[in-house]
Length: 168
Image (cartoon, rainbow, N blue to C red):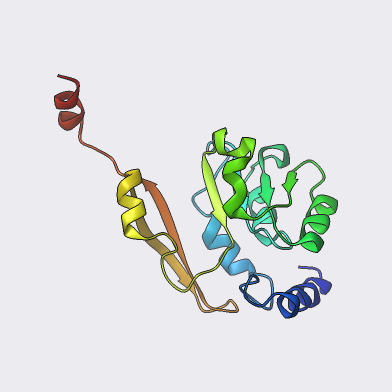
């Protein structure tokens, strides 16, 4: 991680402490946990809140092509930095809550990686249930500021017998 990234994060946090979750970029240990189940077979990966690109770099190491990495970043300085560091990635400077207004909402992604930190599972169970999704904590690390948990959200699988019954 370039040494000036810590300074960038601290300054961004000072400007908007309620919008920036951390005073420092995510640690490599967290980036490894966040991307450990992603491979070239995953397909395009959407990244939410990439900051300075710690997870982005880990995704590239996993074999995801830059052109298959849309990066959604709200902070202007981070978005500019990301476009310089990852020129083939599609950097969108917008609030994640506004994504539904863009073409991204109609795109297919094999995975989504989010650096938007929360102290607990970030999606309420009611929303998961309504979308047919389940959540599982797959790791955590104290070697991050703040310490972080990593969750995998995936589709709830149904036994084939239930699928066959619904078709009848």
